[in-house]
Image 1 (cartoon, rainbow, N blue to C red):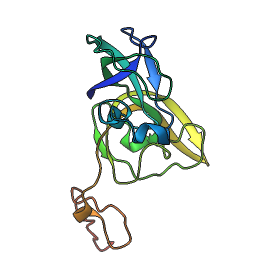
Image 2 (image 1 turned 180 degrees about the horizontal axis):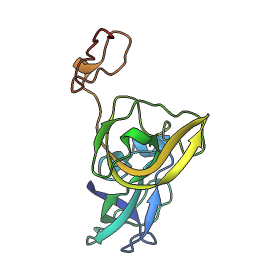
Image 3 (image 1 turned 180 degrees about the vertical axis):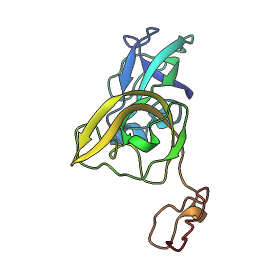
Length: 167
C-alpha cells in the first residue's frame, strides 16, 4: 500500500474518507501547490485518508477554499486477470488480455506493468474467456530497456519453451 502526502478540501479531510481522481484540471498544473496536491496522485486511482496533518492555511486556486494536508493510502484496483494469474500474493505482468469489458482495468493499467494480486473476489466471463475478478496494486512500469522494438514488454523471468519430439 503506497502512502502519499497530498492536499484535500477541509470537507474531505476526514479519516476514512475515500476519493477517486478522475482527471487533473489544466488550471491545477500551473498552481504553486500542484506538486504537493494533485501532482502526487494518479488519475483513475482511488485513495483513502488515513492521517490528517495540521493545516497551513493554503487555498485552492480553483475553488478558493482551504486545503488540508493529509496522508492518503492508495486503494487496490479491482479488475480482471486470467485465471492462471489469479493467485493471492502473486506478482505478475499485466498483459492486457481482457479489453473492453465492464471490469477490465485496461484504462488504468498498461501492458507490461507489474501488479501484485491482493485478493481474488470471484470469476467472470469476458469475450468467451474465463477471468478472475481481483484486487491488485500496480508495482512498477517496465523499464525502457525492457521494451522491444514494437513497444511490447518482454518478460525475461519466464523459462524458455522447450520443444521435445513427440514419440
